[in-house]
Length: 82
Image: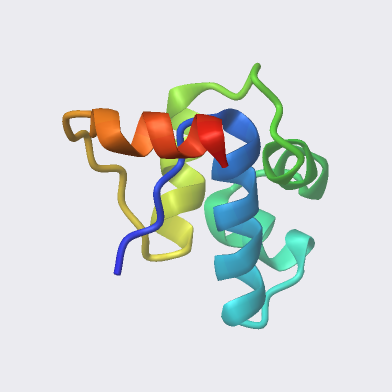
């Protein structure tokens, strides 16, 4: 199953979940990705200023990938009505 993320906050939440599934601290993930722990914290908290190359390094360190797909308009409506 795939996790859908449409906002920086949702992306950060998915990254945090995967990091915890793997039993990694933010510092350990940062070491794997070549980043500071503070950067991992910002990403997990949904910083909109995260650069794409930084995000891709974190995803690779978690053995995840970014996929681009057409947006399902039904999902948009369901998300709005709850």
